[in-house]
Image (cartoon, rainbow, N blue to C red; front, side):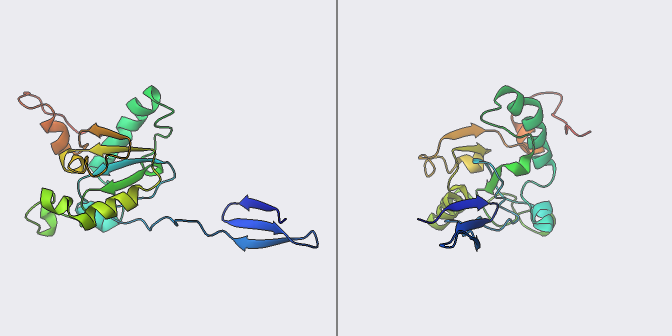
Length: 186
């Protein structure tokens, strides 16, 4: 019986003459490439937002601008200290990140809207894409109302419903306040 030892992306297999042959490991489901709407991460906890914007399209990384910086602050100041077994890293890109809509939407790019409509988010092909993005996750955090439109379609995942970490999302969480939430980076 051959002996297998996993070393990074390679397997060493002991052959019949007691020498080791190196074989490339082929994961059952190779991680998809990162894009403006998706980041694979190294942890099995996912954050789902609404749609990538102009910064994400430019840098090909989700939640690249203020939204991501606010998530970083929430992780480092609140989530990791309070729930280290659930959120073991303060680095946002250690987590799986997806969006309820995959195409970048931004007024700066000439789009009329910055979020997709509910009917677009709930299209079977889009739901399947999001489910594929989240495969293998033990926990999914739906950030904002648009991501939460997928709650029924993702009901077999353990879910947390949270507000969106964009400036609009934070400000709308406290309507009627004289002082609006300011960026944590100022």
